[in-house]
Image: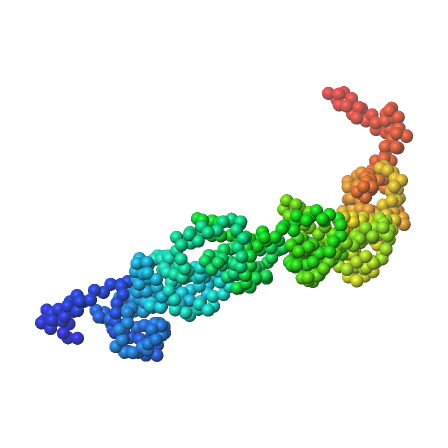
Length: 578
């Protein structure tokens, strides 16, 4: 190290010249591709010597193995390796390079040249992805995207046979900023160009009857046929049959032959659309043979979550909604009730000639059980039912004879007690006597009640009116007032504190009322519609005072009462003293 102390020495000047010469040969810049020599290989790293760098670069051995495996080579010392220089020196003084990034950049240059020259590139499909497949470029191992529509010139049911096969692709789009390449196999294998296809289209016209068209493939929206081994056409799902079809593979197989009718030709897009159902008469033309409200037999052809599609005759499809399957069962699963090819009786409920839609009902074949129930148990009838479910403030009752359910609210359990407390007395499976309160056959609703089996305690007031005086019994007392009831009646009535006396001091003294005492009170409010009554001791006192004044007093009687003229005498005395 002594040689560096005196930089003016001949040795220092010579060393300086050597460094300048070495750096001038190789221009080192970050973000460039450089080629280095592998000097050492360990279990974890590969050492790379790059001309012009002050130290060797370390690369993870797994990164290098990936590159060498794609080239079918083994890593050896003295091999040349191209890398991308990320940093000449990091904070630890080390050189940071990337071999995989260099491979990707080098591959991108090759793809760009092929795209500019409109040349095909060789690749192979390595995996599926959303919307298409991933293609690996054979020369650079770069990954490219091929949309599903660009895999073949016609729809394929499966393209597993194309995986891993070396084939040509055409680059149709490059995104340098994102580093994405989009390729097409369809462009390469297309059997003829647009001019050839235009000539073929000239042979066909709308309305032509095509015989023996071959099924080439199908998707969820239709089936593709090949016409006369020269052009493909599409038969949309709705043009396959007058019956409802979920997918073309339900009735077609690859290679089958079918007759078609051309329904449209798009010369701009160079597409032909055909139809199979157009070759036969529309079965809806015979709809006049069917009437709304009559019973017919129908065949189940498809079961869905919301019902089933049935055929009244081949091709004449109708909808059986899940709500029309049964009178008694709610939220029924159609798949548990029906199977494909089942023959059922149904009633036509609606025919829409414009939209070519028919609605049917299976439950209407049988009598409405709610109407049958109404005939046997009209409103105000009593019967015994079993509790099938209790939810919140509602009780559901099962009527086994008709296989239907009724409903009862907690408010209809008792007249006096609170609904939320009363409903706790009942459990699922209990058999109870109920009274029919309401029946709505069309809405499939029946309402029951328990308290209606007894006389309404409020009826005791049917002959009463406001200001009438009644005798009650004190049940309890509190700072807020007292609770009273009539003799032999379960109805309890609260008298508020401000209604206990005319005098406010007496009203606050609620302890003067003893439980069990009999008490006369006046009716201050009465409503049969709201089943509301208010009682008042104060009103009774006011009525009694008014009656006493009107009965025992006269306009001049006040003059004869003691001290009635005291104020006048005091005023006269004050005047005399002055």
